[in-house]
Picture 1 (cartoon, rainbow, N blue to C red):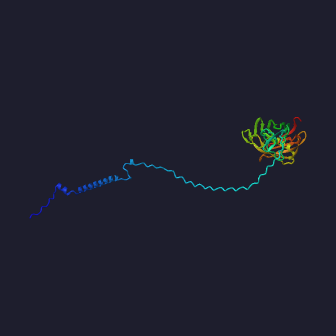
Picture 2 (cartoon, rainbow, N blue to C red; picture 1 turned 90 degrees about the vertical axis):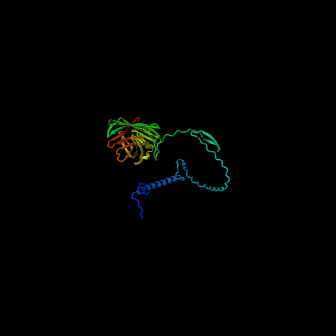
Picture 3 (cartoon, rainbow, N blue to C red; picture 1 turned 45 degrees about the horizontal axis):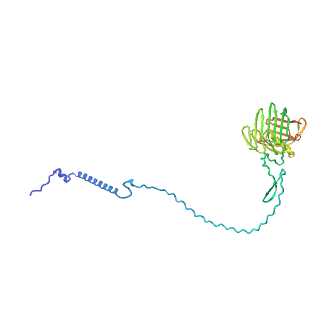
Length: 363
């Protein structure tokens, strides 16, 4: 019996292809097929997901309606309930009042007479009577100056022109002059003197009241140089030459009207200065500023005028401030109507300027 035939060891290409003679190529084709299938499945899944109905991801965004937000105001707080009005307490009935008595007929008023002596009859519901005729409206009163202190009384001296011998450290100079003029309403005061070769002139003018002088202008002329102070009594200010101004106290004086103010007070009440120590206080202006000034009565002395001895009251201006070395003195004589019989000023360097009474014009 013959043995079975064995297959050849060689094979054709067709037979290798049918039997998968190349396993690596087959594996590659298999993975390609798998990958293609997987991709196909994913594509189908994505298409199905996009077509799934639902509001989350719309296919056409332009068809999506626009949402509008409207802000509403916060609700108003509830109003508190109105307070329940409490009924006002009823007033108690007033006790019955007694019947009023019939008014008594007043006596007729006395007859009033005006300053001119004329009367005018006035009638009204109260009866008839007489009353003074209507007087014209008075004009505003003039400034009356500062109120007089207890014991003070002003009496202006009559107009006079008085000559004085002038001395500087005891050496006689040309005579000085004091000219005082007043008509009861206004005044003018002029003082002239010479010291060595220099002329000094001072002028004060203003109004007069029952309480004394009210300066309106004060002027100084020294060695050809003029300065002034202007007093505005209505505005209450005083203006100085440098262009400054200050408040004007009631009754303020200038450097020389203050002495005629003192003269008028001594004339008005000499007994006020019976004992030393009486002090008068003034507010005094020069051409630069306003300062307080105190004048004290220090006693009586005899003054040699060259024509005899004259008894006079001695007044001294007190220091205006610590270290003030300028001294001003004045002697008022009753025999001269209490006008100055002597004036003396001592400068800080010791220079003394004296004016001593010589004569009065017309006497």
